Image (cartoon, rainbow, N blue to C red; front, side, top):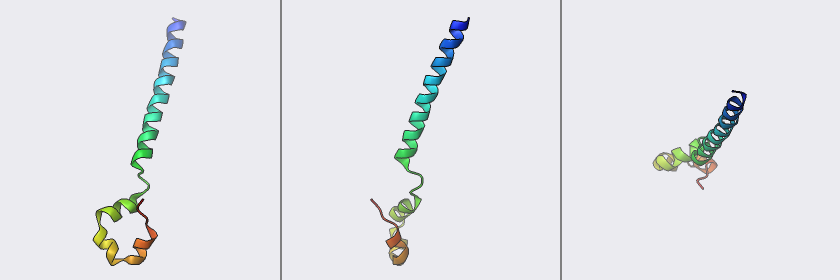
Length: 60
């Protein structure tokens, strides 16, 4: 019974690490903190009307 519990703990830790790795990659790929660039891509006419704000945000 102890062997089954140890195996379960090891498997759960491996699965947890894999889930955290996938979640970390998704956050890195989506980059939710770059919202100004997303708005600049979606609403270019508004940013053309406001050149000072547009100069602060770069789209790379």
